[in-house]
Length: 147
Image 1: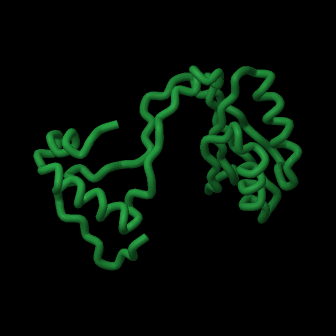
Image 2: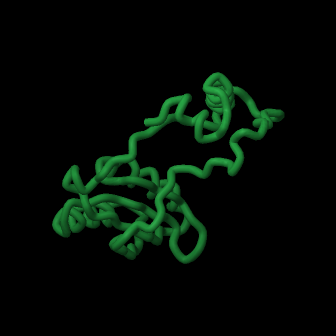
Image 3: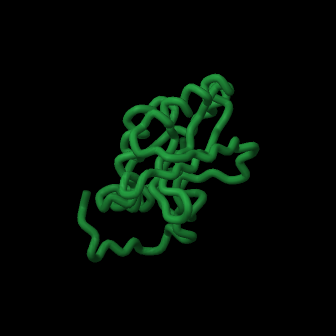
């Protein structure tokens, strides 16, 4: 965690200026919340997988929502996508047996036709968001609604 003073030093701004800017970003929904970066290996979930899913025509959204609801404890991300697959899932598992159980659960969801699973060997870069290069610039809020 970094304080407003720490951010201010890095950006060459005053702590009050940083606080004002952060509050404005929050008010306009640009900053939606704050999160902890978790070391999943220390929680006995060391393996990350990407699963590409083909669904029955027109079922991609229902499948994605079912995955989110039924596999919540292991899912990091669920997206509907373009291309040869319809849904992409990033999930965690502690071992191959757990992955196998998750895949069985996934294949039991109505509308799932095919899956392609890849183990993430090494994460080179992982970000939650991209921050503008010069956050000191004025934030243009024209056209944005608060909240």
